[in-house]
Length: 105
Image 1 (spheres, one colour):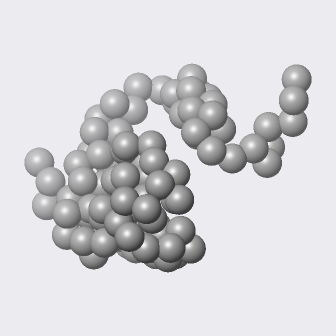
Image 2: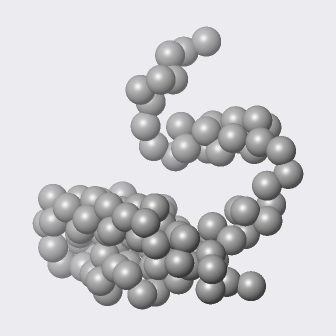
């Protein structure tokens, strides 16, 4: 079996998602709440450029070079934009989750 500890990309993320689902109990309610919070954070807490780059990268499956070509900027700019957006989402979900959960049905 190959060493997957340092493997990155979609395959690693898919492996981790499968592993997480197998190890977790019934957490569908928490997952649906997290998805709602993530969508809300994407709409309210990241800039338009960050949102576009994140959606093209994660939802559409473009790589950073392709996104850069599509948006007319260098791939290093896209990389920084995605990282900043990820950090902003992470902070929002970490620190703002309590407030979001109180306001959600």
